[in-house]
Length: 399
Image (cartoon, rainbow, N blue to C red; front, side):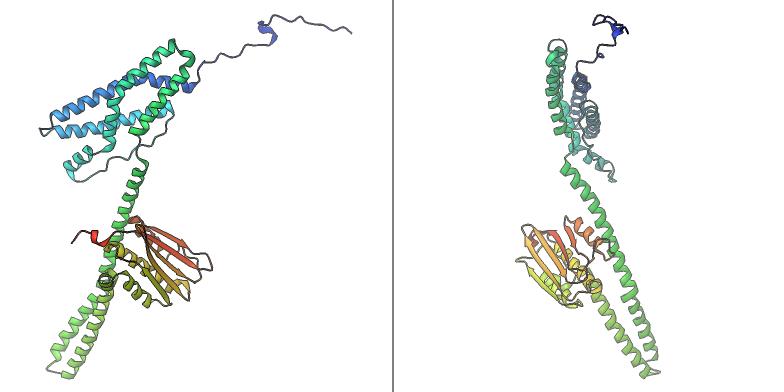
């Protein structure tokens, strides 16, 4: 049996199945994106610089006329758009993820509202500063990158990365929104809606209570007194009986008005403070309640009122839903916060979605930068903690 041996061809012969590696770029795609960004810096910085200088010179030069400030306001809004383009370029070429700042609020106060919101826009002014300082940097990065492409190409990736890191820092520092500020703006916009809705609901409740309660009794009282007046000469005994009934209606109407006033703002809270007001609430609860209020001074009236109604709502829940044998209310101050804790030994299972009004309480406290925490495992006990910002009463503006 013979074996045939094929002589090996030359190493570079493609017929032997040994093919050379595929042609690849010397630099990776991200480096090329960074180089492109640095080369585009020059035309982008020239456009931004010319726009900003023209806008500022025109607006400042015509500020003594009626068109100067409107031109400056319109220019600042245009600067916002230039900043938006720069953020898009940084995302595309540098892989820098930056959230867009919140849009300017839409004010329905006419031309002057638009003018004022535009002139005090921090995002527009930061974009102006960005475009002013970018021109020398754009010239420097364009020159260094272009020279490095031909002379320093072995170390070009390191040069590009170092220059674009400076670009990233500038974009983050001047064109990115403040995370904390944006978060607070969103929270305050949401809280404002909660406050408006709560106030409207309270007004509707007061109107309904007046219409269905005291107002109806006063109408009946007027009718009864009118009939008693007609019968005064004909049947004095019947008239006297009607007057007695009217007297009873007056007492009931006064009691309903007192209850309504207590629901708006109780007199004991205004006169004697939170400790006495909470003790009055506790005395009306169906279970024994121990109240401990360790406050050396009184908080602002608004904070005091929210604390009162929070405890009132929670003790109503204890009476109606908890099945508890005892409860406790503790109020104290820690630094610049007012803390309220309501606990009971009931069956537990309370929550913000339980239909007991706790979600509304959480919204009300959130509207004033407060916190509302529910700890209520099934079987109990229930501990609910409310936290409110502390404001001194003497610092309030006088009415």
